[in-house]
Structure formats: structure tokens, C-alpha cells
Length: 379
Image 1 (cartoon, rainbow, N blue to C red):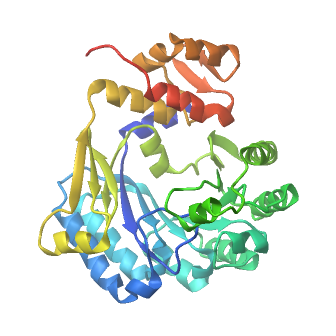
Image 2: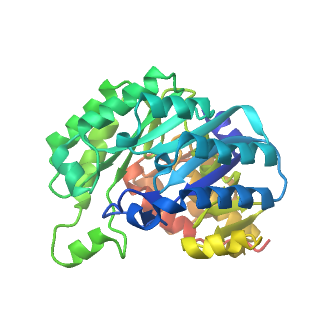
């Protein structure tokens, strides 16, 4: 697996941000606007994204494209096809390219799934989050467990190559039995890919305001127990801390980002990484549209990492992968620190020849913090 993962560092990808949502979920801090503000803006936004793509520097064919958001499935299949067509004209697409979309279960029926397939989308990631109606309500989701089951069936019926179910664990009020049921229900659907993330409280969200007002916050011990239950239950290949897949169905777009591969990005709030430079687009929708419609690239800021910064980032990102990451200069520097020695002694990390591994995923954030704080050699 490590050879295939390392190859992803040489692949090229693109991210397309679709900011529109039926509603803003209480835990979301992404660059989104709710439906009441922008339904009439869909076509205008699609045209702007196409124009931004046409302004991009030429590149080589893409191995992966990801439509994220927001809620990309709020757009029609034809609108998504227009954007994908612009990417193909500007960059080209590899014959086996992964074309993925994040979707709300309530948006996906057989007709819509068939339109996605006809638009060359071959992977759908469903934001199921839970199969417990009470938890879905707490998370502000607009679908039912039955909607999620129907969406998976619709994607199956049209021959979607990969179906991912995305879950969230640790919502206050969610019992262990509820979480176990959600995991088992997802596995019973026989999907090729499963993602699961702990609920986090992001500053400025509706959830953070509730917690500040005295409502219960997610409990880290509870989340740790649920993560361990998940790891014990899922039979798919555990290839990244929060992701499991059948062999050959790992998310190529995510692998590109985790291995420090290059990706371009389009839409408001989108972040790209090409030629050693990170760019970020204007987050506000009006500022994004104003720049593109005036014929200007909507880049708000850029950052070029120095060699040591790139090396630390390579290790920081790669440690999420269960196949490990090449040791490199940063890995050697980590092992030479007092904290690195403690991690090894406690079985948190290990190394074998030229690769470094996180063996206790629940402590991966502690390792990552140590990596980011490393002082390195002068290059």
C-alpha cells in the first residue's frame, strides 16, 4: 500500500467549491451561504467558476476532481457537467480519473444519480452523519435514515463506481448503542468507502454559541471510546486515520492532499497548492464574484513555504496515513527530540527502515503538534 500512497504525491487534482446549502448545519464553519440568500445565484456562480478555470495557468491532465462545499448536490447535473467540461478543456483528465461529489442524501434519487453518472462523476460521498433520527436532528441535518439508505441504493442502481458514507461521532446525547447502530447500518449497505470524524466545536458556529451558553460539549473520552469501537467493527481497509475503503477505492483526491501532491482549486474560499505555493480565494461570495466577473483571478492571498516548512508539512500530513510516511529529515528530527523518544517508548509512533508510523491514532494530534514545533536545519 505504501508504494501506491507515495505515488499519489505525483498526481494532480482539482477542488471545486460549491458554497450553497439548504441550511447551515450548527457545527459548520465552511464558506457557505444558506439557500434563502442565493438560489438565484446558482447559474451566475457556475459561470464564474467556469471563467476562473479558464483563467488558470495551463497544467497537465488531472487524476482526481472533487466537488465539495457547501452542498454540491444542490446544483443540477448539467451545471456540474459544465464545470467539469471547463476543467477538461483547460487541463485534461486522465482516462481513469476519479470524479467525486459530496452530496446530501435527500438530494440523491435514481434520476439525479443517473445525471451525475452521465456527467462522468464516478464517486459520490454521502453526508449521512448518523442513522439515529435524534442525532440527525441535533446535527441540524435535513434527511432521515431512510433517505440515506435510498441514496446509497440510487447510486448503486446507476452503477456509481464508489459510494462513500460519511459519519460523525460524539454528538452530545448520542449513546454508544446509537453509534454502534449507525456503524453497523453503514456496513450493511456494503459501501466501498467509509469516513468517520469526531464532532468538533468550531469558533463562531451555532454549536459553539450553544456550548458557550451552557449546553453540553462533545466529550473527548466518549469520542475515543466510539473511535475504538469503530476500528474494531469496520472490516474495510483502514488506510487513513478517519477513512476505510475496499482496495482500489481509496479517495485519490484526498491521497493527493495528504501526500503533499499538487491541486488547483476554484470557487469562493477555495485553497490550492501548485509549484510550492499555496493560494486562497476570497471567502465572501460577493468579493469572489466581483473579481472573476471583472476578469481578475479571485486570489486573496498566497504563501510560499520554505524547504523546511514543506518538509515539516510533508511529515505532518503523511502521519495520518496508516501505511506510514517516509522518515526524511523532519522524521529524523522528531525522533531526536525528547517528545519523540517518549512517543516511541509509549508505542505511539514507530519506525521501520525509512518509514514512520502512528500506531495509536487517538494520539496523532499530539504527534502532529510536536512536528509543527520542530526546529530544523538550515537549508
